[in-house]
Length: 314
Image (tube, rainbow, N blue to C red; front, side, top):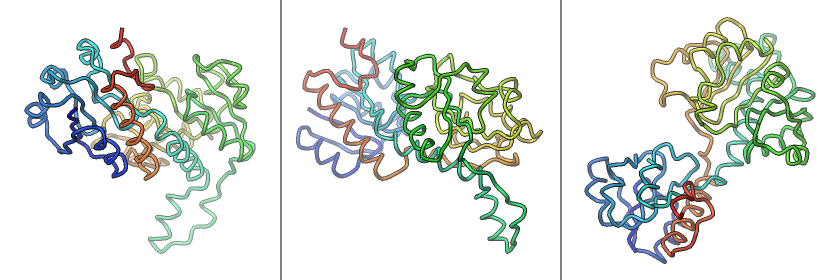
């Protein structure tokens, strides 16, 4: 069995893979990938490599594509399914890391940490300007509450926050077990002091938060997005911040990455991170371990636990 790894894996994951397969680690560009792929039964990528329909079509021996991470936006899953090629990922790898980043952004917004840091470095002492607010007794609204939302809720409870969520797919019993009160989208927008986005990007959620939804929020509310940039209408968020419709925002993800030229970059009361949700040593190590296990299962003819396209086995 030959496996091509194009975006790198941690040493432990690579060693595990090499115990069972012949592995080549090549940081191939698009043209090189087309030339290389006919020789491999498996391909493992992160987010850099684009696994297009053309790549999949050239992969005559290809049986499985592994994404060492969660999102599979860079893989043509439909083309893979048509060829009965399994696509697997590591959806649980970054759960804790993303949840911690979301909480970190909430604290930063509540206590003006980015601005306070900048003014101190400029030689200023503006203590009165940066009076903040506590997370305690505030309402955290979750837009979507899967694995990551559940971990955010757990941490929010430790701060003494009341957690509500809009998630049509979360069972009421599960929500109750997690200490989350399910509400309508209208209630979520109206009642949240902090609105944290944790929905998957689907046709249903794309551009879900726009001008009308932002106007429905409290003027004192903060918006946090560590999920997918396309869920927010970025221009609308920029205008809402500029006009004081909401108090602030923290964004780890953007409609286009990097967000060169986006109006959000010059908007007041917003903090940014460059898509760091999964960027921890622990998350990257887990992603490698999980995807290697999933790819090897597929190569051995076993059904992977995290198959993105289970219909490929139909």
